[in-house]
Image (cartoon, rainbow, N blue to C red; front, side):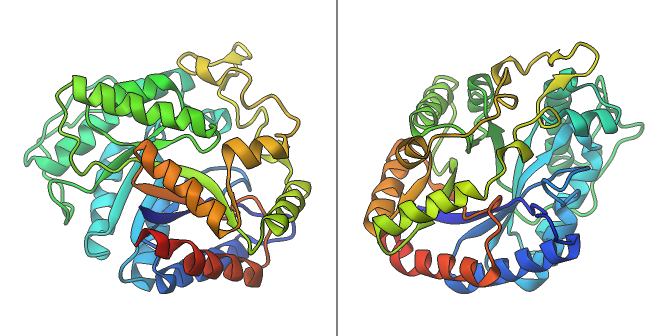
Length: 352
């Protein structure tokens, strides 16, 4: 099992954007010291929910500060971008980092982002597929030509530079809906499993991915599926329980699950076409019961329990655990350092 971390760059009340960057960069430098395998940075726009509008710019900075960590985009929302720019910027980060880029991609879902870029959320899937086709073509072909519904090359294009990794950096598709799992399994593109889904559903997603990939004749040797989970380990079960309650008391669920986050078509006020699986998901409000989080959603407990949960996720078919150690929890830097050091000392050696 590989261990990577998720970084939302959430801006809490009273923080400046610069303070968010400084905090997260300090954590990333510690992760390299502790022996983690990689980091994943999220893209978001127009909200303090996440203040990284361009992941590649941020990863270029991290590439200069690290030597070994894999640098992941978690995720690039392809419909919001010109795919030629994505292909160029990703290739440049791969070059600057010495071939350490992991490209996580997705179609997005937040209506506030699509509307402010003048895009129709109902077109997200089609835009994603077209952009992906164009990026792969630019990475693998010289004098590449393309004409699609949304993008085209006016002249044959040869990308400069091309990625260091051949034929291109590892790709990972964010998968929330079952439909997404099936579509990209048939293409052999590994998934980033839904962080908000319980263990039973990500286990089903992994089974479905392998079944559909095999049925399509895909060679899955060496393919790495990524499971994203909230992770927390404490010296005792009792402390883990107490800390979980404290975290939940400080967590404003409405900052994430609200109308602006929901895939709503502003013209109709209803869920946008292609996002039926999300119906009401981001409008429920309320809280998630702590027992549900403890038993079905989070990797949390003392070292023995956490190791057992990670073994369970590995047995589901996931080879990389993307650990969210508190992207929406306002932990002081020293407390976060202690959490990471304890995890690296007490949990990671069981998988090395």
